Length: 371
Image (spheres, rainbow, N blue to C red):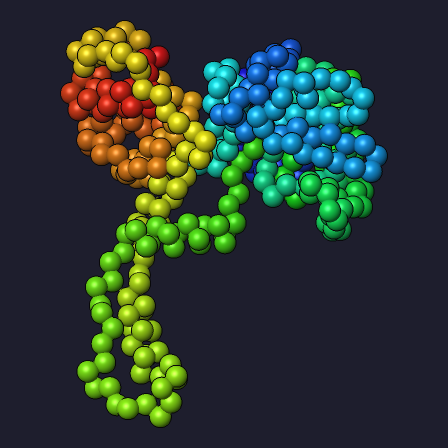
């Protein structure tokens, strides 16, 4: 798929010339692509309480947003333009998960999710900009995209969406099924359905420094131990009893100066944080799990595949699965790295011993299953 996905560019060429630099329009990135699920299947997901969705309606002067689960009655009609956005479709549709991981030429640690939007004629979310990179792949129908880079990022006051007040597009394209548009962060864009259509958005994580700082401080709280206890055996009567004295400030400053971290702790923090499932994600263990022996036999025949909801990353010899570090024997590290990269291990190999035990535990927890 990579031969057409990037318009004939290699991943290295795309990353060097376009990634976070300038947009790229790719005609027939996936030839004959019309989508990975039907309109009805998308609406069924939008109506589920386990799925994040938003229904957006608008007139010339007004916008409204309804968060899911959506009502079937609201996913009808064409009196006013509307669109429904469904997040994390890759977690529920295997073909969507496969599509998402077609973009693994970007590190998985940066990959977020696959959002699918359906819109009636004229539907969209208004001109806006994102802080993250996005690939916009056209499924069924057609969508008009206007884009531009602009310094004026003022927003319409009181709108429930971040809609640009003064949108000034410089490019104007209509995307057909299989066409794709890549946009770097902060490029203003406005996508409007031409007739009914479905668009697949592959988005990437771009945490802010404030977000990372807050999460890292929470990590330090759980992983640091400051055993000192404040004391003042040489205390003298203060001139002002309400004053926070300089000796107290100096002693507490000395205690806090013992807070230290190194690159290994940062790597551990990232491993735990980047593999942490989103709050609405739950794993479902098999109702009647195979015995360890039967699992081993089936594993050799079918191989192993991570559940779409599982996130497995590694840093050096350290592995992280779904927010937790996992112990992997040195002799198994190569196979687990392959599992992390490809999301699956092939059939035919005898995955016995410690690796077989590890995969069986993951299987019993619902983190993966037979391929």
